[in-house]
Amino acid sequence: MGLSDKLHDLILNFNNIYGHKVMSTKEFNLDLLANEYNNRSPAAVIKLAFEEFKNVAISFSGAEDVILIDLAIKINPNVKVFSLDTGRLHAETYRFIEQVRTHYNIQLELLSPDTIALQDLVRSKGLYSFYKDGHKECCNIRKVVPLRRRLSSLDAWITGQRKDQSPSTRNMVTVIEKDAAFSNKDKTIYKFNPLANWTSADVWEYISSNKIPFNTLHEQGYSSIGCEPCTRPVLPNQHEREGRWWWEESTQKECGLHPPDNK
Image (cartoon, rainbow, N blue to C red; front, side, top):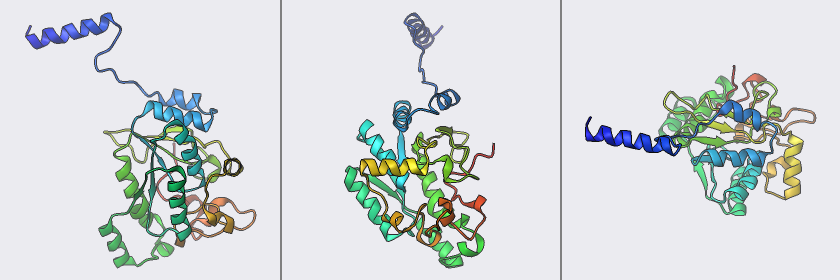
């Protein structure tokens, strides 16, 4: 037996005596925790995310996400926050992003699409190709690819998804899930959805009670807000997602950031 083998056995014996494992890694039991935290408060879910993963960030864009920031900053003042700047957002949305940044005094990272890919799309198809051939290609360049690039450096992310945002695509959202869209064979990324069981009424009750910032477009009849060419106000009694990609089938009203889990 060589010196290195003897040293290895010595370390194993030491750790066995004191009840430790060499190079132990804490296992994240997704099914157990998803069930345990299903009815816990959003703050508890966010706290769990910070406890389980050091490299986690909040994805910010809308009203729900400000609630996440408001809760998270009380738990971790150094929380990481990022937002997708597609280059086609409303002027009100850009002002809203800046308002949130200054209100919470946080570093808010803006993710931009790849310039070459975007130029190629506009050169070949123009600025409004999505009205003819669907929004997937444009959203992939402006949203999905920048998000994938950011998530490659994270272990988990926190989103404002709710079950009632879309009966056809988000009704199965859980408070904790494996991100099947952005995980790969080399790395598993987890997604925390602390507001999964909240309703739109719950969201606006929190915003009103805590006097936190919101996009002024909501006062103009907009409910779910995305890029300016793809978003319009909703009519009375319409579902909040009816204002997104209104020229397409309701089952297609996702941009690729949160594809439904077909399982």
